[in-house]
Image (tube, rainbow, N blue to C red; front, side):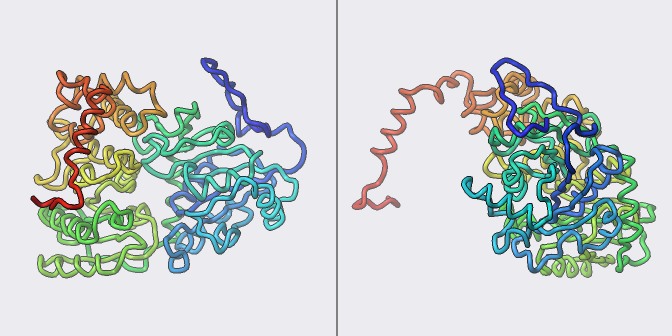
Length: 489
């Protein structure tokens, strides 16, 4: 759908299917496609989609780079990262979103509604767009900078692309009607074959897979030009495999999910787990913005354990390391790279720490909940101390069971946006809620939504009873200590 006005919807009536975005346009004038990316992984996904012919021809293709780091001045933008030259020829021009909106930060700025016409005119002049037809491709459309960009071009059709496991979860925030009616499709990698993304499905946006062969070809090109400058010692392990064990850091403390000390202990847990499996050569890939002290603690522990540890802190994709190192084991918590290692490179993987994350994520609607759930349900544990596998024989959870689980979790996360999933959630909880699956849900959340597994069945009416809630509020008021009372007594 490329009209300048949003498509009207009538309750109970299916909207018209959007026009094929790859078909030649019928309008006059030139066409410019703007691709917004903040990570090299996202840019690689776009390159694969372009190679696969998923975007129709355009007179000009612009890669708009956004550096979303907390302090952008201290972090390389993706167009300066090793290997970017392999992607550069897909685009006619590379522009900076940070420079366009300076001094504002990409993650915290959005235009005031009254200023949108002025900003659009400014950007058209700044980027030499003039009166050309604009098409947008963005990631994470629920938040800035993607949301800001699509608001500044109110007539532009939108393609959303997903660069990770969050596409299998519900849409985080409700989108404005003037935005959602312009979204034509969701492009995503087939990281979990057979699993359909939940993202934007409440708005009937159709998912479209970026072909795996095209993505693998792009990754091979990245590896060819982005060879790591540091290599581990001659790899060897007690397992008989030739590659090292690769540990993936995520810097969860920056998101407020873990404390810095807890994250350090998580990395040590990865190291000790790999060593317990017989690996004597270890490579640690920290998050690009993680503090150096994370690596120093690991180096000290590796020396005490008598193993060779290489810290690979260059800003290259984990997938590049997969190709150069061919690791005998890839260890992480819930990184998307664990799924690319398993699904795309057929490498052995193991997860650790998911039980802590499932407990710690707050609020329940936290978008990281779905990636953690997928990693926990599909990947084998690193050590016997980790949460056991989702199936008794240790095999990955079958896709139909995983789909049912994620639909139940998705409903609990965003029940107002996905009321159609309530019956699925009730069915799953009734049939599969047990000591193992209980970790994916919170009793308080189940109680608030009146779902199985909340308060005991005989008391299920209480959360919905106005009289009971009124009595509880009065009791709290009576029991609340006055300024003259000592709360400790």
